[in-house]
Image 1 (cartoon, rainbow, N blue to C red):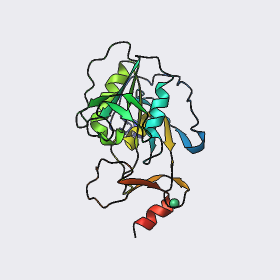
Image 2: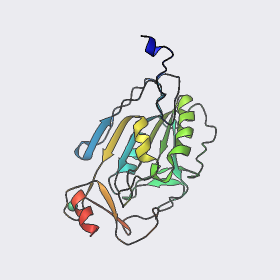
Image 3: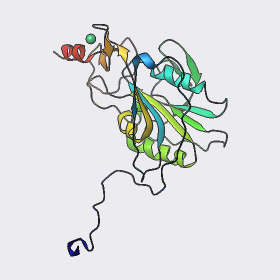
Image 4: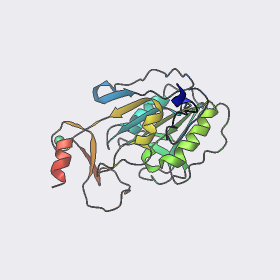
Length: 229
Ligand SMILES: [Zn+2]
């Protein structure tokens, strides 16, 4: 096939390319009753990529993302993990992740604009992130990749979309690089059905406004559309 001599497949323009094959990791079974409001998406990572994150959990406000993260740590050995949170989110505490129901675990603040993880001891096998949405994909991805090459598992939770349904920070793009993407749902404030969106109760122009139920609620697709009128 003369016409194919010198043929080179066009490079797929993906943002990152790695020669190491995907590491096979057996995920510990999930605990807790997440089955009622959870959708599991299994993702296929192209073999040219190293596995980057093991699990990303996304969902709207009040869907139990931080609760999920805290539950997840219960199956990890003590002192084998660290939790990072963006230094932007000071809603309930500056040195802990806290659920809307007051459950908490110690966490370390990390610069959300430049999330450089300091050198960690060899005992640290898992790195967990709360509020992935406050990080940008590019800066967080390279740091996660570095940690993953050191053999650490990465688990993170965050909002998928902001209250205008625009992709919010790193959560959605990171969900393409995981073993499992888990989508959580909340209950619609308007009709009581399954909610997959967040909405603002007060009008604010900026995308990032730190707040909880005084500013935000969760709603279904239909009620979200009604609110836009
Ligand atoms: Zn509704």
